[in-house]
Length: 237
Image 1 (cartoon, rainbow, N blue to C red):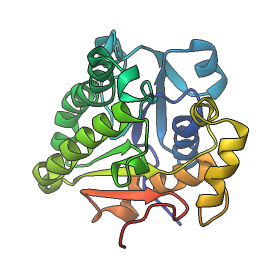
Image 2 (spheres, rainbow, N blue to C red):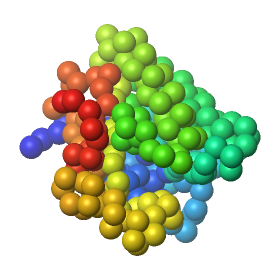
Image 3 (cartoon, helix red, strand yellow):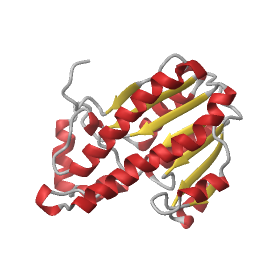
């Protein structure tokens, strides 16, 4: 299937590993000109992509000066601190909102004018299935990702006339380093028993959905959250 994104400039955030890296690889396979961004230069070098070493929480302007334009923007960010409410401070919530919400708004505002001028763009956020089925002990992530989802839904109304689509992909449990940090092996087995597919997703299974949303094949699909969770979410179709 021809996806029509050959030569499109793609910027993928937090792409040195996990889902972000898988998305960058998939876009490159379709002919997109990919730049990745993350904090760890050694990991970025190993991706084989053009890259920018940048901590978006501290120096988002470095990204903007290095990458002037983007046709495809993949908003991705690692999860914030988990824990029970008594274990979290207001600062923990502020940090989550800054990283998962406010910095993403800054990135969108920087690259959106070019998309509107060219009358073509794709903005896709990698969120979490917790936006439709909140997970226990993930107060900060549940809250900040819902805020981003609301912002992007509202944005989709405004930019649709410019042929710019805005969507979210909400992965379920996925085989990433983040999940390994959150779950013991025993807990992982318990989680997998709850997933109708009987296993966690591979990052490439998430990236294939993201790549489709970037394509011309998805030109009429906007303002949506696509949940890719193996069927674990308990909400109506």
